[in-house]
Length: 392
Image (cartoon, rainbow, N blue to C red):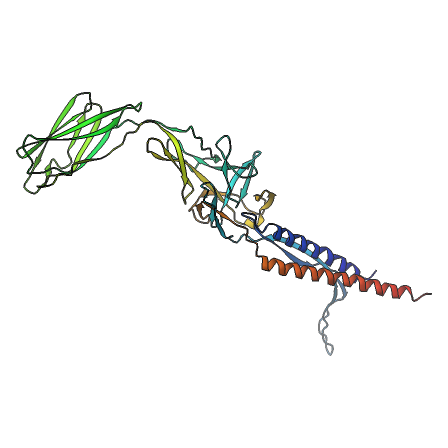
């Protein structure tokens, strides 16, 4: 049989594969996180009809003569270039700006994806459309351990932040150095015990000549300290505190004593009642911040991202996901913002990076290549027919 006949067959197969890859790219032009593939061709073995010879005396050297035996698909590579951004406004839709991958778990298998369309399921887990559970590190009382193993991120509406007893109150502002002697100034702040029960702490400031008497009473008994004002409007001792009977330290170091102005205020206290999760947001570093009914904002979890030495070595597993292979390198877990991983943008999705103009051009190239190889087979058939007609 003619070698050209088989070369044409190999060419048909190779260009059919190119058509398949191009068609798949076009079909996924609107698939979030999809990465386009391209086909690389490679010639096959060549038949040696004449070997090379070296120059000898009066005779020059000759080059080898070889006849190619066709083409084959050398590989199908994936283009991991960044896709465009599409704003969705959904808090749990996320886009990676960089080279990282989301980590999901489905049926016990660890998967990696660029598609960031996640939503909570009935158990409060953030899941992909095909049920893959988003992986990360869950916080314990607002503390993260990103050095530990990853697990499914769960955002349960019944999550509670425990009550925190108040042990510090800060007061700042100005006491009037020319204020009326004996006229008290009161400031009341709500404080909490370890069970979250609220009570009032009353702070009373009374001028007595060049001194200010400060009394604190939270219902468990009153305690008193004295502040002395100087001609420059400073109060001494400079870092004065008042220990109230219920185990609360009132910091008075931020108070001044200038004439003609009263701006005394309680600037903060560190206690709170128990709170129920009301909403959450996702930061650019992948941290999930919960807002609780008691006004506390606390880290609930951090989304894990993965990277590979050779992302092109990943194997597609369906559902816009990949699995690691021997040639992708080991998975490197980290958080958004780490070197080589990228950052997160909540409320957006990464669209497909398919370039339609390039794909339609590839479609034409594949079609013409297929036609040309079909013509090789037709021509070879006509030659064989002529050979058969030599004997009639």
